[in-house]
Amino acid sequence: MVILKTPEEIELMRESALIVSKTLGVLAKEIKPGITPLYLDKLAEEFIRDHGAEPGFLGYNGFPNSLCMSLNEAVVHGIPTDKPLENGDIISIDCGTVKNGFYGDHAYTFEVGEVSPDVKKLLEVTKASLYAGIKAFKKGNRVGDIGHAIQTYVQENGDNYGIVRELVGHGLGKSMHEDPMVPNYGKRGRGKKLKDGLVLAIEPMVNLGTHRVVQLPDGWTIISADRKPSAHFEHDVALVNGKPQLLSTFDYVYEALGISSNEEEEFRKK
Ligand code: MG
Ligand code: MG
Image (tube, rainbow, N blue to C red; front, side, top):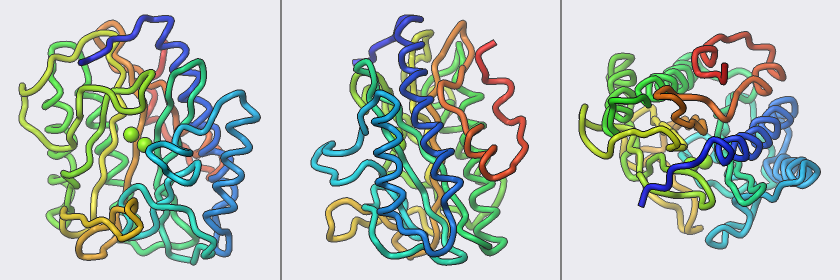
């Protein structure tokens, strides 16, 4: 069942989403070779609690930490470890919060030191495909149009990319995973109609190789089947007056990393 949100609920969801955005900004400042994922996890948990929220992932279906941290070939749902990050790694950090009963849930894939050009391009293409998907989240479209936009963008930017199919975006609200499911591939005009008040977590996961994935024996970590690097970017987006409006932002990450970008401009609350 799809649960549409009122304008007031959307503002509460923006609060939850912004705490995640700011947490990712705090982490962005710390990420470098030698830092451990577990240290970042503790930092995130403290920051989330200091801002009047609860970590959304800690204890979720028994997940042991506040952040999902997925290193290199790990796609999503990685468990933070005490193994220091190394130059050339990429680490996808997915963070969840709950405040006022509503979830925030988004993710960014960070470079550790200097990464190879093909990995850098994987990150650029995956992030840009997220915005292509957000652009298709509008009145008159259906869920399939979002996946179609993501898939088209990725495929136009290289034939060596695999779009993960087993894991998908989702509705977001008082539960972390609500209807509808939002695949990162699809056909135009298929699926549920997009309506005002719908809030989605849109989250392309793209591998630098096969789209196939496998789960590690830890019961959580999903990795690419050929062990090639994988990227994941996620935003929380509401449909307002027929247009996509970002509840989350990468501004804090960009500020920490010294990146200037206008990719979010058209999706901001005016
Ligand atoms: Mg997430
Ligand atoms: Mg999600």
